[in-house]
Length: 188
Image 1 (cartoon, rainbow, N blue to C red):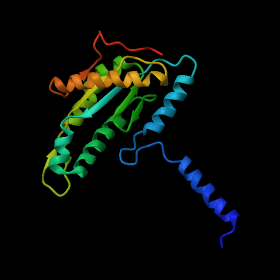
Image 2 (tube, rainbow, N blue to C red):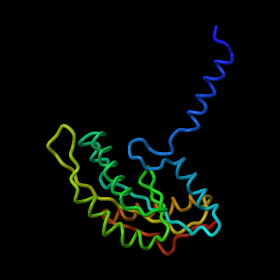
Image 3 (cartoon, rainbow, N blue to C red):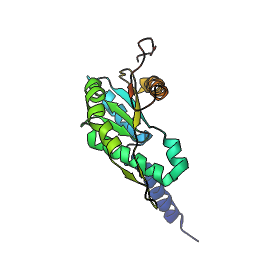
Image 4 (tube, helix red, strand yellow):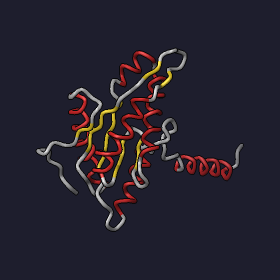
């Protein structure tokens, strides 16, 4: 029979391990949703925190890549784009697992950094397909939200960025789309 104190100790260590689950996605090393939520909460709790914009990124024709080359190739593509994102974001910006980017000073990032630096790197770097002689090249479509200044406004920002993203995909991909001027967002 195991003494109750040992059982309690094991359960306590397990609970501690679960509480300390990393806030990063193990595959891409980008923040997971928990990490993003906690970081945004900290930032927006600061006095005079500037508004953020959400950039949602989607790898163009990703389903076709998975269907043609398998999920391992899809994972390699995601890791490639995540690496470019990590190497390009500025200090203070947050990069997330589903290719989310929370940026402050949006105009600089969206208008200059992504099109002139990131997009060409993503497109030009060949991605080797495992167990094949094939190489892949990919592009990314981005939807940008309106600025928001609280974690409560994140859902609206996500919807706005997602709408812009799908407009970019409908306009033949490999582009950045901002919200339409007529879009309505509740600022919190």
